[in-house]
Image 1 (cartoon, rainbow, N blue to C red):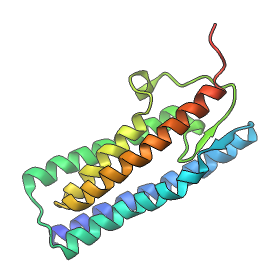
Image 2 (image 1 turned 180 degrees about the horizontal axis):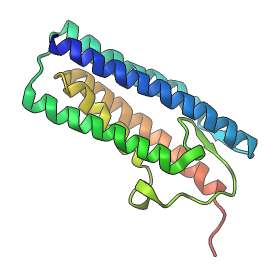
Image 3 (image 1 turned 30 degrees about the horizontal axis):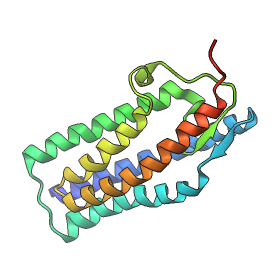
Image 4 (image 1 turned 45 degrees about the horizontal axis):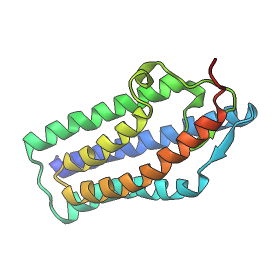
Length: 176
């Protein structure tokens, strides 16, 4: 089996992981809306979907059409980072439970979560996204995909994080 074929299997596994996220997100959205949750920032969500789909397509397209090599020192290191980003993402999902979503849906009155990775970072899931965005393509030297995704994702995250921070600030009960 070629390294490109193995890389294709890896990218397909990440795509399946994304589908699992969407199943969890839909279930969690129902939970949130049933408790008065409000969605904000819906306008940037389609851009996020296109960008994340583009990451997966770009990885495969560049690896196959540009015949990018698998460079062991780079590839194995980036694979470890990509897998670590998946572990961090699912730690975030488990920590937030039904409050986690791919959309910005906030249930008014619920306090901010301050356990798990949220003890140290306000947005650890976005750390996972950033790391995965450069690491996954670089597993197979798809540097152009890593660069384009990283720049586009930085712009998107600047909007997303501001939106999320505003939504959370408006929904969290004031402290004593």
